[in-house]
Length: 238
Image 1: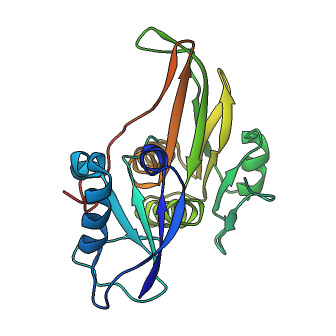
Image 2: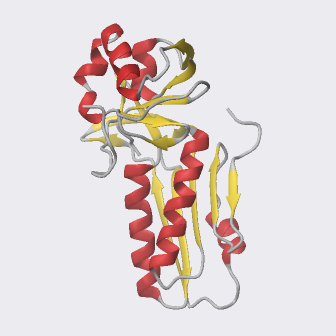
Image 3: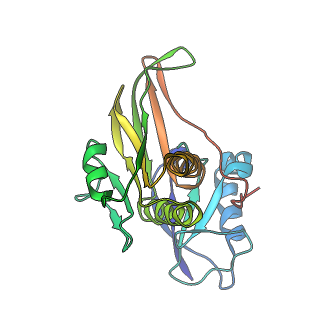
């Protein structure tokens, strides 16, 4: 059987390309795929405890049996070009998007307001000018776009169901960002402030550990992929 294999972040750098088609015996599982690439690229085995595998845009355990035509992705720890921005607008009015343009919180809020809100809480993550005193020039963000949008939507809908809120928006920027620019926004409307604050905090915390987005930080004297950590419930390869 033939599967399409995708590599992201630092794993793509190890392999030297973002994707390839590979043939495997019928009945192979994700463990077989991982072992194949770990033999070719020893760093995969070294990083096994922080690499996550996905099958058809869903997190999956190594025991997952594959079928012909599956899309397999190797995902390094999250750290938290398209012609048009990938967007999901649900029937309840929640809004989730990836963009290569400036994030405009006021424009997003205007999509969410119904007139019944007593509170609007906005969290913006911005690019700071240093990491532990090392001067930052810029950041590059990339992601597994289709899976990232799916995960953002899932997280937002789960939070909306668990809190007394009106609407939720999550927007993440991709591409190159300069110091001071907004990389991510989580916005929540609600009748009252407490659930709005709680939902916004939960939203950014879950986004940072579940949504497959990676960043490379550029310094005067070099560059590095920023390693975060997966949520404890995500199955890792090692």
